[in-house]
Amino acid sequence: MDSDRSLVLPQAFLDRMKDMLQDDYDAFLQAYDQPRTYGLRVNTAKISCEEFEKIVPFEVKKIPWISNGYFYREDVRPSRCPLYQAGLYYLQEPSAMTPASRIPVEPGEYVLDMCAAPGGKATAVGSALKGAGLLVANDISTTRARALLRNLELFGIPNLFVANEKPEKMVKNFPEFFHKIILDAPCSGEGMFRKEEALARDWTPEKSQELSQIQKQLCLNAADMLQPGGQMLYSTCTFAPAEDEEVISWLLEQRPDLSLISMENYEGFSSGNPAWGNGSPELKKCVRIFPHKMAGEGHFLALLKKEGQSGPTANISKGTKLPADVKKYLEAFFSEIGLNSLGGQPFDWNRVEVRADKVYYLPPVSCSLRGLTFLRNGLYLGDLKKNRFEPSQPLALAFRKDEAEAIISLPVDDPRLERYLKGETLTILPEETVHTKGWHLLCVEGYPLGFGKLVNGTLKNKYPAGWRA
Ligand SMILES: C[S@@+](CC[C@H](N)C(=O)[O-])C[C@H]1O[C@@H](n2cnc3c(N)ncnc32)[C@H](O)[C@@H]1O
Image 1 (cartoon, rainbow, N blue to C red):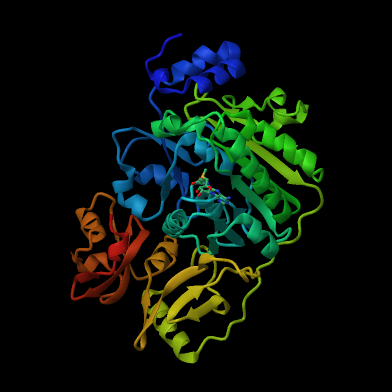
Image 2: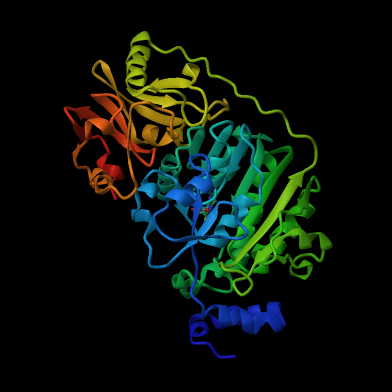
């Protein structure tokens, strides 16, 4: 069948898809004439879906296979809404939400996202940890790892370690360490041709074979870092069997301690195809997402379990001794702001560490970071200035609703919010504040956006220039 849209797709790709899909091929091609869908995923560490539906100022519709996912219309710009700047949701293509939604993550676990930038899956699993346990998010690209850190900070995830390493180097530091691992592998991106035409232009038939070798190596690294009894989720956004069933077949042959397990189903999912791997019927437990069967782009997922029993989770305090003056400055700030708890957990002084006048809140779990290049270990709380503590933007975003007392909360449609996010000073009425002066968290509908200092009814803006849109 003819389709204008399919004309831009490489012929060798179309020939292979026809071979793979046979009777379904025409329906698959027709999907390229349909518009793509747009999605956002709610940060349930900060807000429940019920509450989000009450305050979101644009139209959203539930994504049926993602418990906290919503479609929005193409003409809406959700990244301009203050709820986005408060880290209440992440913008993500709906199929791309699936991998993180199909690996069960419990608060307290040690979780690794090996190829994490810009954070589509890491923000989801980090949010599921609810501040307890450890999220290690890694990406080999430094620029992409920076974007990853920004998104994790926007999401207010305090218990994080953001690395910029080759995964094979991490194996030494984290042997059989993680309860859960996400390996969202670099791939040929065939499933995203409708979203990003450039991927189709750059496609070559040889690319999948090259990537397959990298993917296999990454799988072995993940297997080495997985605890006995742990689970890992391998995903790609490509249809190429060489990067999907073939990689999983090869991994299972190399590592008999791993086996495929079924994941929560959805009527639009298709099973993995044994014939596209080594013929093992087990491959049917993999999931394929095709754009002609669901309102999303193409994806492949495999959930694997390592034999044995998972180790217990333990929150290990660091026991770092803080200099008395540093503790005094921090205590003064926390008392001014009325700190109740942070990131969903009671504040633990043992986790505070100072390096070069920067104050960090270390993750609750200690591990060896020797030799690793990293961008962040824990939450960056702020800076020590002369005789005082100056809070950071990531600290503002790590506060959940009601975790601090000194707040000024404005409704989502209050024009002052937009002005705050541009760095302007705001006028605040006496009835809008709890305290009459000093540090405050400016909030949208109760959800923290950033800091400000109140002086005579004027809120001095502390929203950093680097965070402005
Ligand atoms: C599919 S993208 C990851 C998308 C991300 N998981 C998300 O949901 O936002 C693959 C990532 O793998 C990274 N990458 C490529 N080769 C890698 C390697 N050998 N080790 C670790 N990361 C790698 C790329 O920089 C890229 O950011």
